[in-house]
Amino acid sequence: MTALALRPGPLLRLALILVALGGTFVAPGHGSARRDDASPHGGADRAPAMFRGDAAHTGLQPGPGPVGEPVPRWRFQTSGAMSAAPTVADGVVYLGGNEGWVYAVDAGTGYARWAYETGNPAGCAPAVLGDWVIVANGGFHTLDAETGEAQLGISPQRYNPTTPPTIHDGLVYLGGQRGTTGGYFGAQDPEIGVMRWRHDTAAAAVAAPAVAAGMVFGGTLGYEFVALDVASGEQRWRFRTDGAITAAPAGADGVVFVRSWDNPAFVGGTTATSRVRGVLYALDAATGTERWRLTTDAAADSSPAVVDGRVYVGGGTRLYAVDARDGSVIWRFTTGGDVVSSPAVTDGVVYVGSRDGNVYAVDAATGEERWRFATGD
Image: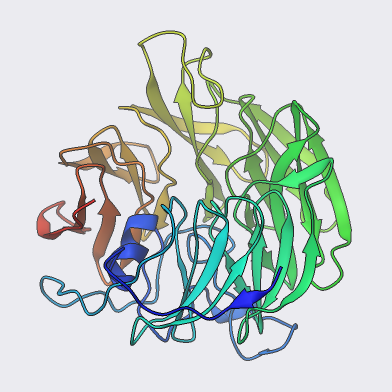
């Protein structure tokens, strides 16, 4: 595959609003991770950028967010729909389309710098590690961030990555499908593609693993949530949920927060009954012991954000703010559609997209709406 140059076109999403809808809100010119995970692979002074902002998937973003109601600055047209969150780093928006292309768009002007055809639907958020863009979408691709030229391309094989890449200490942690029914989590070298370790699971993983407290945390469609040693992949503990896990976990302050569906009949996007709800679990990161659980409305695709002792997560048409200590609900904010995007938090504001076509800015302390933006989609 080769990289192509593109021109800007009609509206797809405003860059900042696009980021909020996908659950990764950052301002142009900023990466979306902290400096304590800086990359050894070129650009060592820059922190990696990835889905949910950091390797622990806290959802905390450096900001700043829009001041007042947002006004579109530019419009960019892709050749197909997008379901993945964009990633913003060093003034560039990187996004993948369901038609198989990955785009690099200038965050200031809306002009495309390059586009790369992966050969598979690019439905996972890219990650940026130093001078590289990492794409995992059945295959595994390491692209030059400046030109889009492929540095490494691995076609789909028996082990196919199907989650957004998580970057930690220069390695890529991801999950995927093994064969026709199984799954796995692994640590992969982005330069040569070698898997440092791999842990097989009974079912496929579709949500990005989190890295925190010296462990890799990940869930599968088979109601399985595991904690693995970050260096060796050895299983530390295992927890069984009440349904499939389709959202990324988040780790903070010795606790890992896990979202799952609450229906054993639900697997892989289908359900045999109408009684489907969501569950948010708080598990001890060291032992896997359940501290509390909260039942919410479905859908349960929203990954939790954890900031300043509160957990923010979507469920059904609502955005929930939950006390991280005991699971009590602090406030609920209701939208006009299912909240399947993942909240992003910066400067005391929670940003989330809804299937009613709006992006909402909600006061993190009170749950009051600050503004909404109609995307037209």
